[in-house]
Image (cartoon, rainbow, N blue to C red; front, side):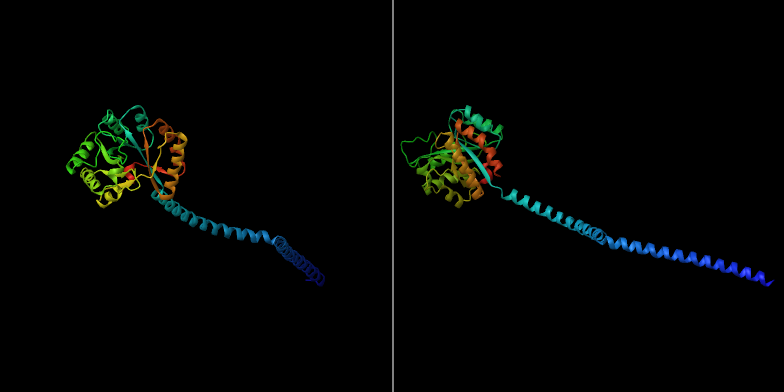
Length: 306
């Protein structure tokens, strides 16, 4: 090969090497620039990337925490609900002096909450009211007449009198209990002279116990020992908390209903005694929903005897 030809080949090879070197250099510089640009972009907005990472971590942590917290809340709610059920205040109503008439008595027994119908014995409508009350799922009680301290007050037929012999007292109690059906308990009608007398009350309560009835002391005298004696004898018993209608005035009865509410909220339970009066019926129908809104449960009186 001639010298001139070799020189041409060398020049061409050098050009090729230079072109290849230039291309490699451009690629390398481009790579460096892209990496630098990416770094600059990340440096220009470092918070976003960091926050996104932190957010993902926090979301994961919060999801776990919320789940645990939700479980705790369910447990707490269940415990709270159980406590409310077990310890919610309770009120029971007894309607006294039934047996004289039927118009108001029917209204009372058709109330949409439990009331105990306490019926006087040997009256014209005693048996009828017991039958109708039972049909309306209301509890039936004997309103046992007893001699009051005021000798001018008449307790009505079948009354227990202080001058009676023991056998006369026992027979009188039995007759009253058997006068009408479905009796589950007894409370006293008048009786301030009897409920202060331990000896007589023991005789009366022995008969009541023999029929497996509960006894509620109406507390017609502050010196009554009837409740105490019933407890000693192992009879299911309770005491009256509030008289609703000693005055036949709607405003007075409303005030007494507020007293029932306060007593129940303060003491956990209350027994209210009312009479078969139209004003009492209207107040009960209007104000019972207010007691329920206040968190008070209206229960049968048998639920409050112990």
